[in-house]
Length: 329
Image 1 (cartoon, rainbow, N blue to C red):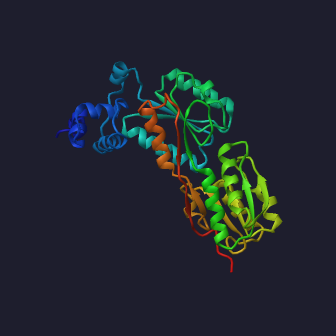
Image 2 (image 1 turned 90 degrees about the horizontal axis):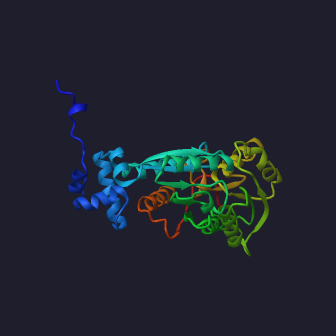
Image 3 (image 1 turned 60 degrees about the vertical axis):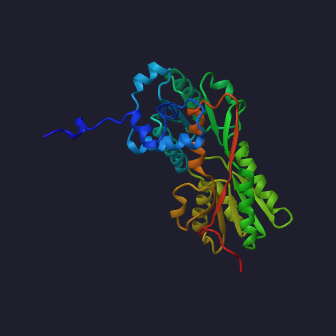
């Protein structure tokens, strides 16, 4: 009996070109991230390649092109499901073009972040998708490594961001429409531009319409409930906007322990739309960051080597209304 695993035909670049109805050169440009293909054409070819199960000979490519077929992904907290979803999106996009992703979790440690960058440079990674611990002059620590930064400000590098200010406005508008006039704000570190912008947007939309009674700033940690306790114990607001979904769920848990029902006694709205918030109890109302689109943009820029002239790409956010907010009677 023939061994199907041994006799199965290897998918070639010619097969990809034929199935995608493009020239062999165009297929090569798309797979190798070279040339000047339009974004839609490149995406079409990569989808076809993924559907066919096309895999490059990485050793041959490294000799031929000087590229290793690996990308780096540095995240501050892989235990956070938001970053898990981001990593999966980056890997899907990279895999479609025959690239593999090396993931480093820095656990919020700048020293580990620098070690990870040095290791990627030493390994000859083709590029880096980086979610830094903090805003910084990133160009000084990624010499010679094409880099796209997500969610942070970084001098001299391409940025992929969400409209954080607009997202904060969306959260405020939703609470205002629900009749809330005394609200609270619990944010992450205000040293981060992305956090500052969403809080500024929230306050701007409230101005003249409702009062932001308090603003509690927390550090990112595994146990946020003690940090949000001060906000819950005040009981002088009808709604709280949380700077992240993790903070929002910590508020929901602490509220339950304090005898408050969400949303009957307190409305809570988050930011990010991590995969698990739609199945929480209650399901969390939040401002969605388009994780998949942002990851695709970051990877595409690296594959196209479109990092010479720094770009700033900003994606719109979307309000996702679920069960954790209500309209006041």
